[in-house]
Image (cartoon, rainbow, N blue to C red; front, side):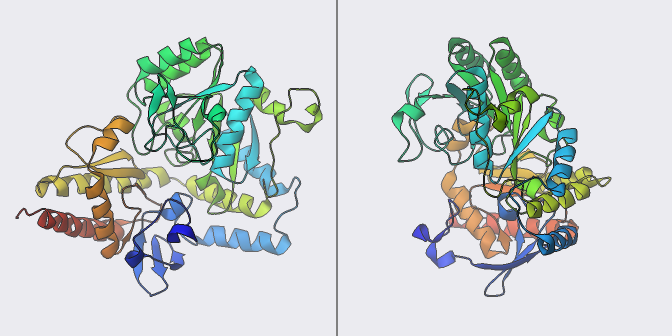
Length: 419
């Protein structure tokens, strides 16, 4: 595999880790080393690894059949539960990955509005398709609002249909929406963008502007869905979009993603419309398969248990506050930003309000910090988010903060300072 990795998560060759198994908040590699896991499969394992309820549900369904390419009882049940939970939920369609979900949400917006341009926010990640890989990594604007693609192989005409605005700058977003209203189909946003919380009033401002100018608002809730609250970021922040995309947690560790929202928009995926000029194709070989559906049902059942979100947030907040306190005590500029069970650590004195601020932080120090944590038994993507599960408890928090202290002391020693 090129790069000796599956995607962007690449470690130095002398630190390459091959995992063998997981249980609860722990992973073990092929050499028998144990890690407290803060990657959680990049988010899906919100209940931790091999949760008994998920394992039992999957084993039972696998014995009945893995996929039928048609309606099945588990996916119908999951549909009812998601639509009931999601504030914007009126209808739902399934795919297998978050990338597909955002791709189809944008296609639906263009089909519904008859317009071609979409607006996203600088640094926002919406998957790996051509319309998403603009303004996500280190690309630069070539003229106001238009950005270079983040990947080779993306046709320039495709990239030219994507506008990019600074996250948390409501005035800039309103200007772009008003200026391009005649061609703008949708605004897509991560309500919590890579750990950066929305400024007060920011999501409300883009909701009002999109509604005023006949533009659809899409929340990418692949990360935040069923994580910030049972109703996701919509419930947590109190703003309702037209469409929302889901993934990660709703599949319980199995390939499952969805587009949920307004019935009149999702109605365009009805195959009876084929040939009408308004039909928006949405489907896939494994979309809505019953194995992933029962894993999702088991996960949502656990997330409905009393006190789950309170404990999840308490654990995440204790970790964030502990990391920042250790940084202050050791004289290092550490910021742990996010919301409860999802956060990111930056090394900077300045407040992080958008992607530009995050790029001004010390990336080399964050990378070194991540490697130090790996050496101390914490599995974490260096320089990226921490995910907390429902089974991370007090012992894991204590061990984590001990490892963080050791890592920060090592960084300080390396920088030539003294205790």
